[in-house]
Amino acid sequence: MILFHRTTIGEARSIVEDGFQDADWDFGLRDARTGEDVSITGVWLADRALGEEDGLKGDALLEVDLDVPEDELQSFELQGLLWNGRFWVAPAELVNKHATTRILNVDPRTSWGWRAVNDADEEAG
Image (cartoon, rainbow, N blue to C red; front, side):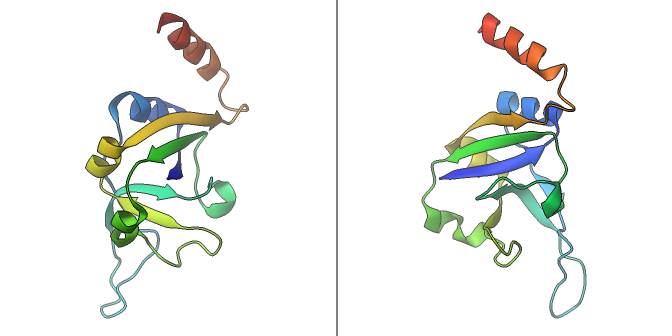
């Protein structure tokens, strides 16, 4: 299953090299009974490339090829969060164990140094 994650260029490089780290997310969610804010821990992933128009900032778009059956991801899906897509918050350990991640795209307006560093990495590897 191909999924996407948007982040900063530096964070994207770190994720590709070292894997995802769990983070706490609130997404403006509230508990229906108590009205308290709800925080979710994990890595957010979407079935489409999200951007600023979706409320997410970040200059780099990661493609995450996750080799996990869709029914195993079901418990991590936040249904209704996106009106035109699907969204999950899964444990970093699960994602790192079963995914291949690559930087798919970077914003050319903010990535003047990224291409030179990336090209040097490819030449060295």
